[in-house]
Length: 385
Image 1 (cartoon, helix red, strand yellow):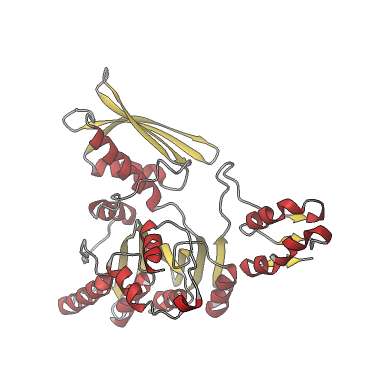
Image 2: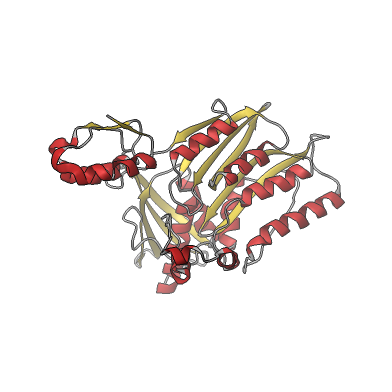
């Protein structure tokens, strides 16, 4: 059981697993295993909640923030003001204590790469800074998705006659994709001479002619693979994961600390977050998954909304995109009495659809399918007719 748990943890990804074993195995304590996995660098849900709690304890008002996670790494840029003065925090002693406490929070996972916390006055471009932080932290190291992800393809070839290396990228389109790719190419000290941008339904096609600042091309296979991995990371850092929740309410000190604490207590892990203030109102977006990085049970989402308030916390995005068409799955109303053999397949697909799923109860020769209907009912908000 324990070796299997370790293997699944190391495998990562967005899948969710439940391991129970025989009754004897269920009596074994797993606390030491859980602690060990954290020390090995396994993902740490609730980290953003702990960071916001430290800032709240120091009477900081969070004006804006952006947080990204990718490949077990996390980075955030947070703009804070002193709640009493509504201006920057000028107390160096207070800043020193805050920095020490934030570093203690970040060290909770025994991070072998170390942690970094810095304060600065003025404004910085959040997206630009986050790309730089993640790149410097080498979040691109590790497993490459290009070989297994049919929606992502990156290739590099040399155009010897013109003295360029040509980078071709095809992936699912999303906001600021072009910005993230160009930032990453720039951070790798390459010059983009020209490029072409196109779209094909939900996909983006991009081609860049690049070379070193000394006008040399990418000559070694190792260098090309590094560029591919860095571009993969740039694309996936901002790729939406999970369900998008939007919070709109009157801003106040401690708001984010309370909201993220409720998330953590209900088993929600924040994959990405964006925090802004508009006048006296806070407008925040969170992409959430379960603690394993998999999809959330909508019943838990509804319980969280009931606790926080349905009027201020809404679900903006919950259904995954079909990989072949790029379209979202929609609810269906179908009588399966005439096709019981495909019933289980349709049930699994419908679990991830938008809207109400209505299904006629199976009868006669479909007794085997009827037996698993209660399990399907527990997965999402089913309406059985």
